[in-house]
Length: 107
Image 1 (cartoon, one colour):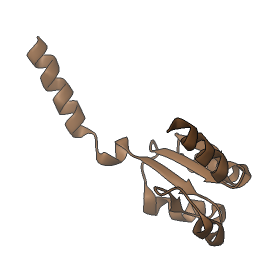
Image 2: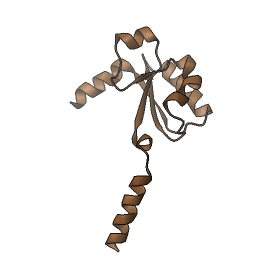
Image 3: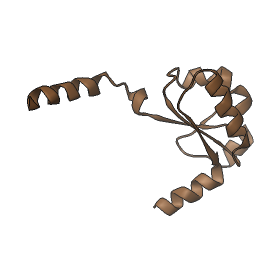
């Protein structure tokens, strides 16, 4: 029985794509704001372009998408746009500086 469970776990893990496990950080600010500082793993997609550009990043409607901006307002707009498109796992992480402060505390 243990062998069967182990085999099933291995098969299940093999069917998960790398995209299923990835977190997509999207900076929805302007190019100038992005250039002044951004999360190293972030992809720039200004909030006004999120609906047209998100498919270049992921088409997976269940992907873990984290959006942020300066204080959270534009990220909220981007989140709503993505949810209208059917994306189910979108989080408004708020502002860039706030995220950086949280990360510093975690170190």
